Amino acid sequence: MLADRYDGKRLNSPNDLVVAPNGDLYFTDPPFGLPGTFTDSAKELPFQGVYRLTPDGVLTAVITDLKAPNGLGFSPEGKLLYVSNSDRERPTWMVYPVLGDGTLGAGRQFADAQAWVRTGEGVADGLKLDQQGNIFAAGPGGIHVFAPDGTRLGRIETGVPTGNLNWGEDGSVLFIAANHSILRLRTATAAPMALSSAASPPVR
Image (tube, rainbow, N blue to C red; front, side):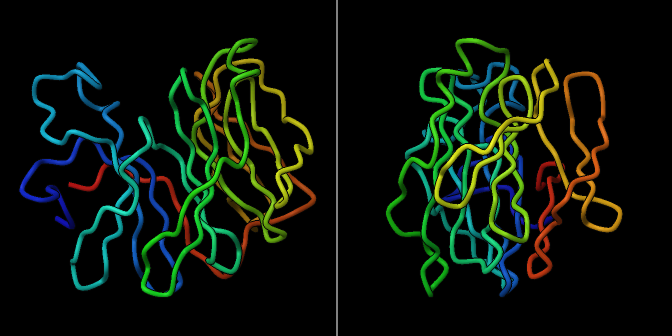
């Protein structure tokens, strides 16, 4: 077991994780694995956090003000952490500078998914970055692709709620979780080589 409690209270339902170059593990903890989600009677923590777990087992909360933190990913050099907020009322992608001590600086909204939530199923969900720092973000109707400066480059259309994605094979192939299907797409780019990132089952 790596971690199951924060400040003596049981975690909600850990979701996505990424590993920093120094071995620190960052993970999101939305309540989606609880039967009653946000209002579940077994929920012990008053917030949904993003946590940092150091190799020596120290767990700290680095984000506590997002309603539904979900997907997350590092920029190729590991200096920025992107986090999706899977909240229908505020469906956004956020970005935070990673400070030298592993904590995060002030976050800013990187992109707003509200317009796409209105016109399609799904919310801002899992995400991955490529070696140029482009963000591939699962969301309403497919994978939304953003340049590092926030420019939306386009969308990989799936036509269904799309929850997650990951690089595979030689690093240039995206595997996409699109509702009841797993899709495979070869791209003209590739995963960053400097970082190891993954979507994982809950940390218990």
